[in-house]
Length: 75
Image (cartoon, rainbow, N blue to C red; front, side, top):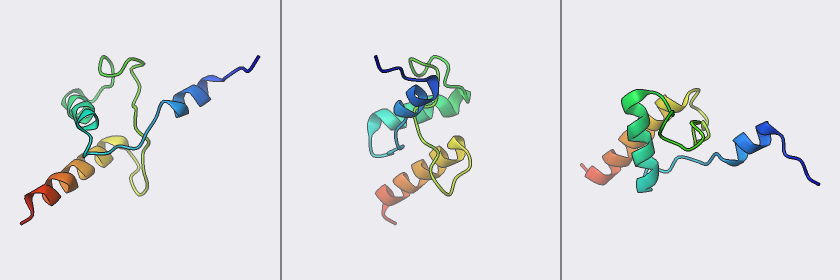
């Protein structure tokens, strides 16, 4: 029988944040309103990897959302 440890389960449930995906934007907006994942995701944990060069997920979410909407505006 293959046993999975808790760390591997936490890593498997994470994905890259893609602001062009509506579900990811909704999760980000709900998190940025409360700064807590409690009640937003089933396991109450952040579903996104923190990508380089960011050191925290909230800053990454904000920056990627701004870049996404700036690209849609096309000054």
